[in-house]
Image 1 (tube, rainbow, N blue to C red):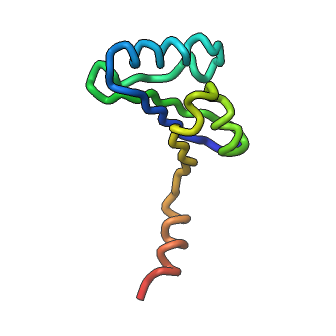
Image 2 (tube, rainbow, N blue to C red; image 1 turned 30 degrees about the vertical axis):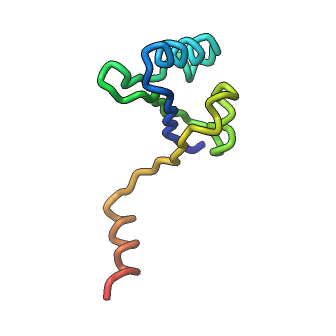
Amino acid sequence: MSKFFIEVPHEEEKVACLRAAQTLLKSGSHFLTNAEFGCLDGEHKAWIIVDVDTRETARAILPADYRSKAKIIQLNKFNLAELDELLSHHTD
């Protein structure tokens, strides 16, 4: 499984914020009911991190109206050995 960060923007108007939150929560998806929102701080987006197999599966979690606007980023972690190995291929 891979880990994906999903960012879902919405319009800035107060009603748009409320409708976006309502739509995501009403979807009933466990993933979406755990979304974090930045609206109260002026950042009109929702964020969730999910463990799924593919980017397409991550996108499919979202209600259809939000899929095309969503930004989906595969996350990874590095350890020092991996970084040393990667850097050894990029030194002059």
